[in-house]
Image (cartoon, rainbow, N blue to C red):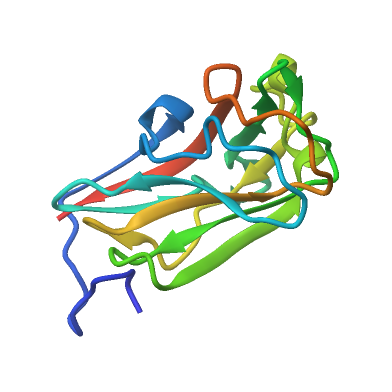
Length: 170
């Protein structure tokens, strides 16, 4: 499998590069303003542009050199206060119809939400390039399931994401 929306033939990539996607690049259809509720998955989506395949993460460990991308997800509520660190976070891929989610990383929010040290490999999780990737019009997805209900709402303006990705152009 070569990513959502693929045909049977392996694609021929023209260019490959790494970059970091931030929260402002995710869809405007986010949980911003929704009440923080325990046990409910809240989703942020990034639509893959035309003629691209994007994989979450970047780099790998080769010959003892670690060049994996650093992942940072800081989700805050409207006070602003960080959502409790024991919230569950999943990163993955979703098809264009939003009917099939494939998780590639799962952990706790406190593993990846130290925005004061966002570039520090020791303070945040590193995320190597992951398969299968998402093709144009499919989505990169961040899902969060809070562990407690709060009497406040999510706040995109106070939150921040730094998600390393590898981009392939067709």
